[in-house]
Length: 95
Image 1 (cartoon, one colour):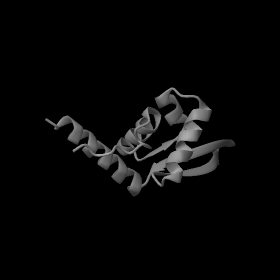
Image 2 (cartoon, rainbow, N blue to C red; image 1 turned 120 degrees about the vertical axis):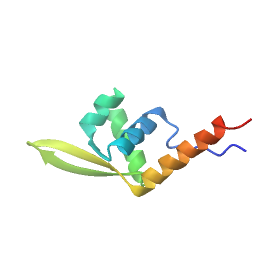
Image 3 (cartoon, one colour; image 1 turned 90 degrees about the horizontal axis):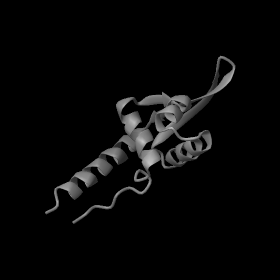
């Protein structure tokens, strides 16, 4: 039987962000914007959705007098990603 895919991670932009954070558990807004090639508003909205779900934490500060947003993957975010990958593997192994 097919497992449900986490709809939060099934979005290409959010999946890209979380996948990157699995490899590199800490990043920042600028890096994620460049990685995804998305506009600032879209990245911001997706980060807020991931934060509300408890998958990431956002830390806002200033760096060289400019706003700086740090992004970190939470244990819940890692667990959700691993469950998503396991569900996809299940889809591939269906006969």
